[in-house]
Each structure stands twice: as structure tokens, then as C-alpha cells.
Image (cartoon, rainbow, N blue to C red):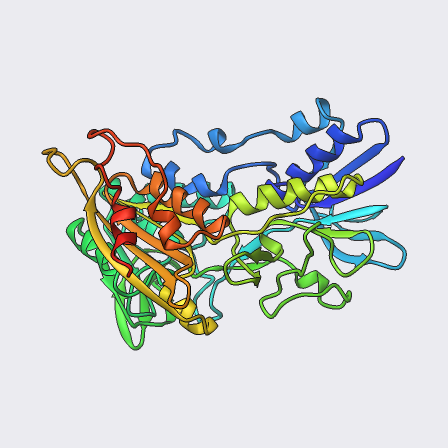
Length: 446
């Protein structure tokens, strides 16, 4: 009997656990250790409970702890926080938070799938009442309770989560302010695309403050936040949400010899193995190989976590399966717009020393003679030496999702701009023009 221990009970951890029990049901003993009290829930769906598209937090749970225990025979534990790993003796040590008791569990093979924690800047007042992050279902439920009385919202950070939260509050007619330390929203987009998001924010009544770094939060006499200070400017608010990024939850590994990058993400090979025998890692605590950059990167997304977990579990039972890497595809909705990107941006290509140029094209999502057509703003990035497609960004009201996936597929298979132009894509006037606007953009490269 092989004893598998998995630290983390969400996407990567439970994808791996399911592979183990399905591929090796008679000889596997699986123990999963979850720091919180909920297994396998959709973190990406949290803002949409506020927005109203998801009725309740229970709908975000894919499989309950009881399902894992009773149906699949997994020893799924909750409120078990791992604090230390003895790599020589192959033991995991931690604290049972419910009983306030230490535990120690031996393993034959170990998967670290501890995810990532929200980053809250170390500034005065960051722990007063009314200051939040949004990463877990309990985080969301706490926020929802406060929203019943406090509806003057300030979001710190204009990235994916910040924009999704701003959309959620604006949809519910809750006044919202975004404070961003850079000079644009969505810094993962190039500066010639991001203004489209700012225009939409302003059109929908969202206040946006650029080039401001939050320095302090102050509470009123009731102990609740009432003022946010950013570069000595005061902003009244009674609810603050930090959406300033996440960091790998790996602080308990720093003295183990497990190789980490400068952000604390775990180095893994294609089989999700770390540099330590019998220890694997997957998900938001681990790195991913970027096929376009041709180097390891840190791109924490649910899609990557599920795939890496599946690959890790398969390899842990002795079936070789490599993780094929990522091309950096992401998408989000912001009010009436959808924004998506894949590959590398123009500024990323420049930072990597890749000879690159870009082409910009505005087309329509369907045939241009339809009265209800919507504009599609498309940017393609390509190598100047042999016209290899490097990346794409698309912003529009309709048709963004299907096109970014076509571009992601093209990137995965290292297509040139000429090859992309020759793709046989579907056409009928209610769905597209006779030349897809992506290919219209590619045709402008000569």
C-alpha cells in the first residue's frame, strides 16, 4: 500500500487525488490536508455571487468533503494546517486548528498544492474592521454581511480581480472607486489596449484613481475604516478590498531545500516533480512552463491548477504524463466588454529581447452590414525575423472568447502569421465576416 499525502484540498490537490484513486484504487491510501473547511470550490466564481449571476456560495462547491470521503475513500481532513515537512523521514507536521493539536503524518509520495494567498501591503490600518481580501468562500460571506450596511467601496488594485469586483459592485448599483498605483488598468495588456477598459469604467460610473499608492487606512471612533490615504490624498470609504495580487503559500518550505523562485513559487519539471525525491507540486504554489517565452513562469490560474494536478496525480502512480506548458491565455468580463489575451504582449517581448512588432485592427464580431454588429479591437504581436505569432489581445463586446481560443491554439502549435491567415475558420453572416477580423489583422503584416 502506497501512502499519498496531498497538502491542499482545492483544484490542483483534488485533481491529483482523483487521478490517484482512479488509477490505483487497490493500492493507494490518500490523505488530503486542507487548511480551511471547504473542499473543491470555484474561487474564480466568487465575484459573480456579488454580481448576481451565481445564486449562492454553495453553488461554487464542485465536490464536498463528504463526497471525497464516502464515495472515493479519501481521508479528506479539514482545518489541518501544515507547518513543516521532514523530507528525510518523509513526515508532514502541522496543527489541527479545530482541536488545537499537533499532527504528524508519514508519506511515501507527497504533493504540495497549497495554492496562493492574497497580498496585503504592510501598511498602517490594514487590519481594521472593514478591510478585506477575496480568496475564499468565508471571505465572500464576511464581505456580503458587511455590504448590508456599508456600501462606500474602495478597491485597491486594477488587475483581474479588481476589475471583476468593480463590475460586480457597479452591477448592483453600489458606488465603487478603483485605486491603481500604475497609470493604466489591467497592466497585463499593452498601453494601447488598456484605455478601452478605462472608457468603459467611466461610462459606468466607476471612479478610477491612477498613480496612487495606498499608504495608510484610518478608522473612525467605531473602529471601522473611514479613510484611505494614497500619496497623502484622503479618500472617504467604509469598505476596502485589497486586490493587489497573490503570493504562493510556500513560506513553510523556505528551510527545506525545495527549490523556489524569487516569488516563492516551487520549481517543477514536466512531471510536476520538485528537486526533492517523492515530492511533487502543482497549482498556484508552483511554476508553469511558458511555451512562448521558453522559460518557466508564474501564472496562477484555475485552468493551470487543474491540469497540473491531473498530471501530478498521474505521475505519482507511475504513469508518465508530461505537462505541456501554457501560452498565457486569460479572459475576463468587465461590464459590457470582454478582454482577453494570449501569448506575450509587446512590452513582454521587448523585455525578453525578442525582435517583435505588432499590428492593430478594429473589425466587427459579425458581418459588417448587420445593424447589431459590435466592434472588436485586435492586436497581434509577431516576430519581425520570421513572422511567428507571439501573442494577441482582443477587447470587445461580443465574439472575443472564441477568437482568443483560436489564437491560443495557433500559439500552441507555433504558427506563423501567414499560416494563421490561411486557417479555414467558420463563416456565416450572423457569426462572422467572410474574413475573420483576426485574419484581417494578420493580412496587414507584410
